Length: 255
Image (tube, rainbow, N blue to C red; front, side, top):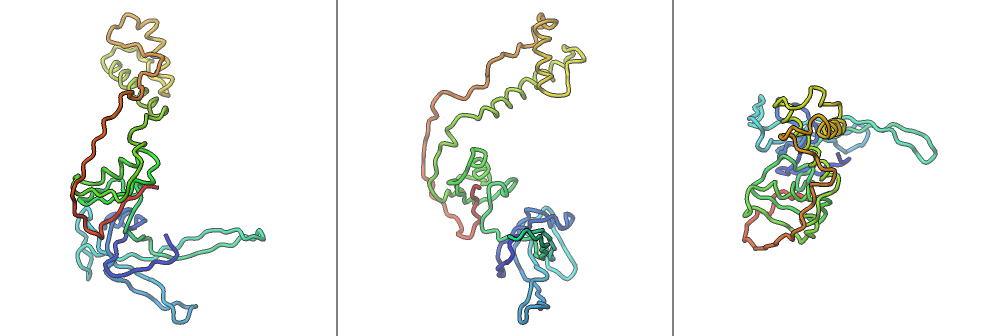
């Protein structure tokens, strides 16, 4: 949370803490500023500090009605946080500050956008570090017509091979699904399930080479990597779609 919040009526913000889940004041909830109240600072003459911020929740899970406030308008109060800082002379000091837990919401990262959906999806894919980030950004939109990529980006993340650790994860999950199915059918001995996945797969391989050799429904797991990246070239097609995006829509960018 920044030390200074520059606010104006109608400004989009995002709530950063779970203040009251029953009132939909939760981390990641989008809102719009409708007002605030400030108090005179006790030590800085002529200065005021933000005391309560009033925001209108945007598309909350359910309507919120508080006494003396319009529908979906809720108050946000200040939070105090303390940190310990080390000075150059090795002296430690404790600093405490109070701030309302909101951030301007003109743009958000791919991580923060998870679980959200917008009819107009403006994205910046230039700084994406993985294909998961690209997927997260692009999948926030509801249609191709509502998608706008603000600048060119490298498609290496979309055309590259799967990471070795990810291939291993897929392979082991496939093995565990087979073992679970065989155990459900009663074709595996009771002691076939171990504490870890690696012990379970190792014991299955040993069982298949000995007592389970004649069980035709139980496949033998190969010792080679059977989840290889695709070798065929990906056919790429491009087309330009004319679209109209409202200029004040939120932008998603990668971190």
